[in-house]
Amino acid sequence: MKLYLNCFTLRYSAFTVIFSNRSTCLTMSTNIGIIGTGGIARNQLAPALQHVKGARFWSVLSRDKQTAASFANQHGAVAPNNAFDSLAAFLADPALEAVIIATPDALHAPQAIACARAGKHVLLEKPMATTLEDALEINAVCASERVRLAIAYHLRWHAGHQKVAQLLHSGALGDPHYARALWTWKSTDNSNWRAHDELGRWWGLAGVGTHCIDLLRWMLLPTNGEVTKVASVIDKSTFGGPHDETASLSLQFGDSVIADVTTSVKFNALSRFELYCSEAVVICDGTLTTSGGGSISINNEPLEFELLNPYVGEIQNFIDAIDGKARVAVSGAEGAKNIEILLQADS
Ligand SMILES: NC(=O)c1ccc[n+]([C@@H]2O[C@H](COP(=O)([O-])OP(=O)(O)OC[C@H]3O[C@@H](n4cnc5c(N)ncnc54)[C@H](OP(=O)(O)O)[C@@H]3O)[C@@H](O)[C@H]2O)c1
Image 1 (tube, rainbow, N blue to C red):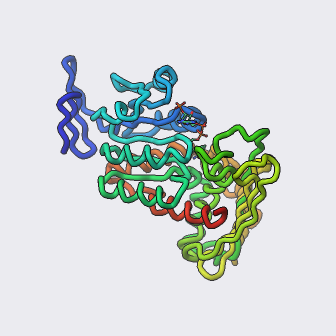
Image 2 (cartoon, rainbow, N blue to C red):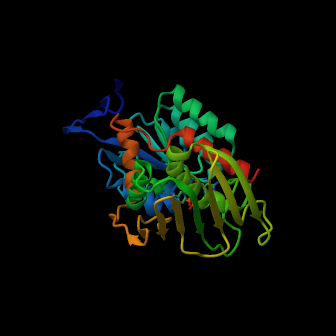
Image 3 (cartoon, rainbow, N blue to C red):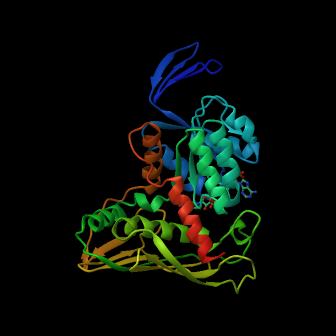
């Protein structure tokens, strides 16, 4: 139990009582802040937060105070002091309980560690870090500070993928033999931070490849065990930078199943996830996306699934884990294994 006298908030487990000089109210909401006001925060995370039960958008941190203020206003941040340009001031708010970190990859480690040391739970965008050492340090600090850590791999909350995973893990599809995932986009130049070393470590592999690796591990770990071999071919020829432009990875799970991942920043392709099992061929067209959409067939028969916002599911799982109602779907340990595979692919 924590007593926060300066903001008149008494927190006991998930149950928060807020006293003010005008009214007293009971709420079950966890106050969540966001760090970073870029693409994913603006287009997906802040809008999704409005639909998460037991959470409310509390405050935001940006490099620029005015940007923070307009983001807070646009997305309805409810803290009395809701817009910050200083990490220390943002974290000093005792009513802030959890933070979503949506900044360039190399900033994740220092920000996540600062949040954990301030006692805030952390939902950390993928990839969780740009070095294995950073990933392990994030995990160690979150564990020692006893805060929840979840890594934001939203494809696990795609309702169609969840059905495929259930069928696979129940044995209904037979034994997996081979899988592959293709996800690309087209960049017209290399101005994005992912293309450079200062704030990124991989380009297409960090943008979308890490999601494909997580999807494959989610599907194949229960049936075949951990990734035991990684091979790769990586092209960096067009933009002349340090990072992958087109990448092809082969992963072996256990001692048998092989899964391929292809990413590129040079062309647009319809995303595709294919899974070949002894009893079924699963084809997911256009499901590797932000929308929760696309189509899935199993042995040429359409698989019906609900169109659910995967970011709502992702944040809901984080909140439910804070409240002790669920396990975190993607732990820091899983996030670190993902980094290890990326490093093996492109070290
Ligand atoms: N799960 C998904 O579906 C998904 C999709 C896209 C991205 N992501 C992940 O989310 C994170 C952010 O990606 P994004 O696409 O949103 O990137 P973005 O559009 O470039 O936004 C990043 C934000 O980080 C903040 N920032 C702080 N320091 C910065 C710096 N030195 N340079 C640039 N920005 C800085 C900026 O917000 P302020 O200006 O407010 O400081 C910026 O708007 C990445 O880790 C990425 O991998 C996840």
